[in-house]
Image 1: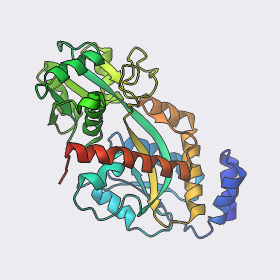
Image 2: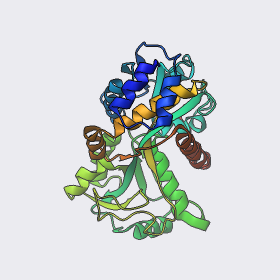
Image 3: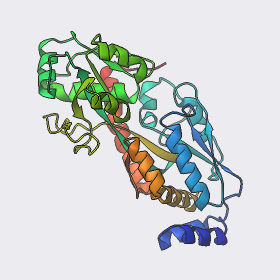
Length: 331
């Protein structure tokens, strides 16, 4: 990045002196547009935030950020594009918790989710809410746990897809709520998306589902489903009457999907820091912040490449044992 671009950055955003220096040092960053690869379909809940950030980052960086949707084989095809891209800051990955679990879910993948990537910025976390059909006898999380414990294998739960964030969060609950007696036993029924599962949950054919807050809150507000717990450490202002899992005795249970920006491993540190600064600047824009909050995302406004790396490593360490214990595979 040329020095004049660093000066422009300083005029447009409250960058720290260290960040401005990092941007100025990235003189080998070409001027072509930057591809932000999203390994999900256009118009979806991952693509929309990516496009909002790309628009704001384009106002700060000397390069225009162009979102490119590369779907297929889960997140593998789009992620591989970034893993094998030149290490020049011109190709970035906008991904989710799927990046932390892909190694455990698939027997073979053409990249290493840690070694082949440099963490850039953590965008935010999206909580989940456990809900049951209104006719289901359990009215609290404790009642659900006791009911399932007394009737192992009798009850089903729905998810938006095998190996997805909702499936994994449900398995984490079953393992943690079971305690020393071992995991609770419920039958997993996978659907092609939460909207496909919802008719069966509403009708009571499947009594329980854990899903992202954005999808569940409308049903809760209309009284069509009964919420039992939210996966955040503290209650959400969006649904203040829904207690957390932790409040109800499932100690340390937290489960989110999240959004993150990664670069190919070996991307120069000044480039990484300049992109990180641009992401944080975009997240400080009121319209972006408000829209992401409406989408139930808990924004991380000040992540660093180091804190993002630590978060990613912790997520991999958290989810891979759950996947192995539950025998989950996606081929």
